[in-house]
Length: 269
Image 1 (cartoon, rainbow, N blue to C red):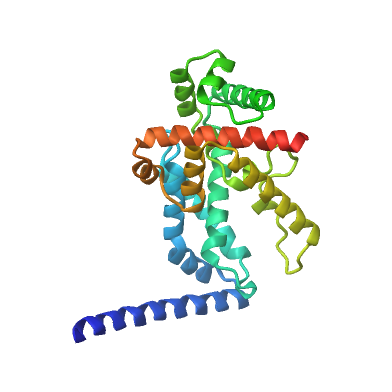
Image 2 (cartoon, helix red, strand yellow):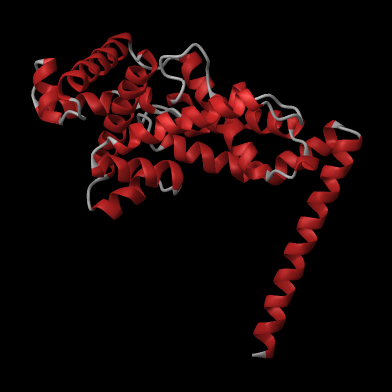
């Protein structure tokens, strides 16, 4: 018992030493943002990049190399370190993961690995969802959407699989659907003053997103909740729902398309 206590105490002491060392690095970097200090912070937080890249990669086609995502994410981590202000009391890991994910998604968009015909079919599906939603006053089923597109349900699910890359977006991007602004994370001012107008806009965007999610089917809501709010991978969600990872990917794509259609509809009202 004593030995176990000593090991636990040693582990806690070691963890405290690491935390103290990182806090000291942040203080040094705030006073003098030298590259050598930044590089030490990058090495310490590098596992965040691998984690975010792995999560984004689970929803991408197999030909997308996770190593390329990690490389893009490193640029996001460096940007986060250079712009982070420890004095504001924010948790760096949360801030950095947003920047890392944003950098990865920006790189994916710039390389545009999605074939033009797939993007065209994605737009057709979104427009069909908008039309059906307006007519039915509810979220259409897969069978109804397939009929509207003139394809079978099996072909629709195959389309979901092809649209996986187009659906790899953060929820912040979804609330900007139909608006001229980009991601909320990218548009938030990086200063100490709180803009009351920006707060109201952010609250309204969140309300619209919550309303759109509430109108999803129960299974789609579960997928969105587990993936975006509980940070589960597609494989882990598959185990929860008792379906394959491929099926979860289809459900995720369907949920994103439906959210896009609903948010565009709200933006035009």
